[in-house]
Image (cartoon, rainbow, N blue to C red; front, side, top):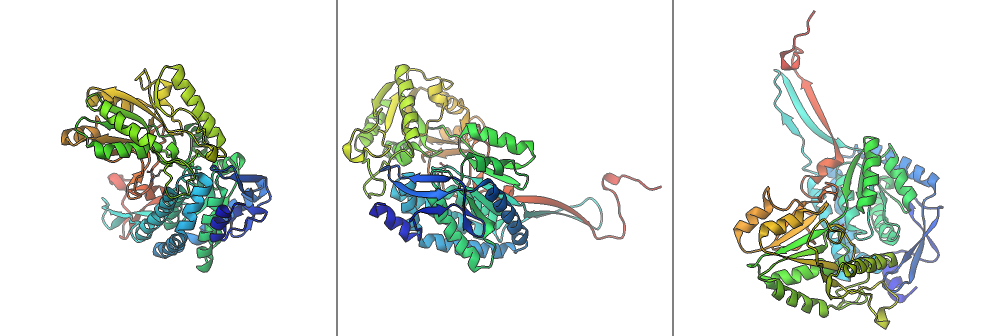
Length: 515
Ligand code: UN1
């Protein structure tokens, strides 16, 4: 193992001698198939992880269910105190964990650390929530009666997360789920098992110190078969899935067919709209970060850019300036802005998308191929690309498909209404961003005839949301909401309790039923 990799792993107490167990449900084990964690920057094998055998998946599910039965009776503020300790434990390892995200996923170090910070932030939020998950008292129409709406723990929550946020998205779910009194069972992406193991080691230690069963936060490294078992199990009340629209449809249907609950975070195909009065000194760098940051591998990455005709030329000139000076290389190096794509197959997807753009005569004004540099030839490095397709039709594949790579398609418009229409005409509806100084444009954009995405920003790029608002998207993005806002309400079962304190037993609506 390279020194940079072993330094990070030993900083987290991960021993990479031979095989690492990838299953935790109170104890660490794993006797299923091996999966390999590969560094996207160098191609180096970081570790081999033992996944769960089918029997181990069943056992872990059973342990998680038992843990829930204990944990649901721990008072919510006490659960909050455990979350506070988890928050401290994560913060203490923020730099190492952030570096591990960078090493294993490929995003640059500051974004890796930022992702851990997002987990820390949602823990803070959930600590507060643990004293504020209030139900309601509803006025009853009957004398001497009270109606309560009580949030009770829900059960077992399965979290199926994606490679691109191997820490934060689990964090959103774990923090709310734990505050709500549930047990979670986490199946991370098969290509980022080390991040999941490091996080679970930190959390399990805190649980242990508090005498809480470790299976309150179980982990099952594995592939599709593990996911299928969790999704179809009637022992899982809620499935929180982040991934592609294609797999999301399968998950959604499978869980619905057994009347389970889902939170789906699927594709994003996010647009930024630049009005002629936009402050370009803010808008250009924001679009650059949105499209090139994380190598275009955020669900919220900017994939479509709609420029008003009066500023189009100037905007593109300035944007090209940023693209031509982007520092590409090792994501762990301080100066790097663009790291590799996560896998070799992502590179092929990028190349096919470029091929399609060329076949439709798009004007590729920068980028369009793999880097040819010798020093980074071991990694999945592709040039960030700006293209101007000939078609502006949002129904065209070029515009309607999410490509998880740094490719930005540009079109030019005359009127805001046209740009909003393009913004809304794609199947996905995660994030969107308008740049303007005219409050009338803002009113249109955030209102009934405005953006139909879940995230509707003004003078803020499409990516990089804080945890405070509910995060998620509409239409084929799946309508899921995670982290802030009212998202916690999905992690509880609501009990409507009518209680009679009187000496009579009147029926509602004045119904009379006496013999
Ligand atoms: C994702 O890409 O799956 O808003 C999540 C953002 C981050 C989360 C992205 N806070 O870009």
